[in-house]
Image (cartoon, rainbow, N blue to C red; front, side, top):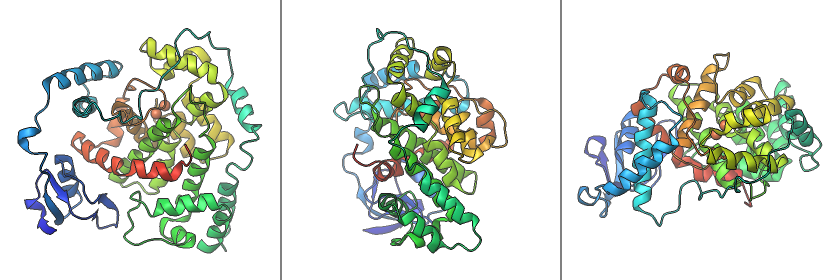
Length: 415
Ligand SMILES: [Fe+2]
Ligand SMILES: [Fe+2]
């Protein structure tokens, strides 16, 4: 292993050790083969020296040429998926190029399974028309669901403790510690690449002290909700792929929030994590209607949320927002979920705009799927509000991808 200066680092070199930034966050894992995007991340993060092994022997300029057939097929497939977007917009155009490049590589390596966990086999569109089911009826079904008796009880207790001026990190850790499964997940999460702390965090009270009480209470709510919605019938949707999409959206929202120096980025992570919770409610409590909507929207090349509005009279985003309101979660979370497809200017516009853009990116790159087969259109005002150069996209995507699979394991067990 040799440490070389950033000026000498080249594409295809292999990291001999995990790279950690000044804040103690993991940037890239040991063994990563450096790409131009990685080099950009290192420059942006002010990394001076990099531990490298050697250049990857099988990724030289000579054998990295694209297969034109795969490229052309990737572009045709991407055009179909981007049919509801404005490719003249600089962000959408940059995202389209990234999506085509990634799809080309995927097609060239045809034995490699799709990143979204495989094509979800939607039932045929010959299913009977959906029976009307109101959003209130769905929320009542959740309220009376005996499988969710303790949902958010720890989150509520944590918040009560936070409000008490006499409470300490130990008191909060005591509350969380009553749930051993939650404790194990939280400790794994704070010791993962999601935080990238240089030393191991062994106890909950230390995690509370380092991560912060409000941040930990948000993560607790997110973990609790995720684990209450993991038993969706597999003939309706691939639940693992669905949570991969949600976790990728949450992780990318957190990365974008970091680029904007937003504090409490865990709240935005949880906003992204729960943005399609309304879809899970539909899959869980109205599987027949959901199967019909999925099949029909796909066969007609319609965006799922506009088809939901037409057939049900409301969208999954509206339903998810109502659910968070009933659960008395913070208004900012409710806004991120309810408005993630249409981020109207509001008090929480920047946070909602971030989740909106992150969702578009993970849909475009097919990182999991919560049922939508097309790339949702961009609200140009939301992109303007975020105000990031499109050149920052590849590094933001790389950072998110470093975290997704690890975080998925911690959030979801047994599926
Ligand atoms: Fe959505
Ligand atoms: Fe989504």
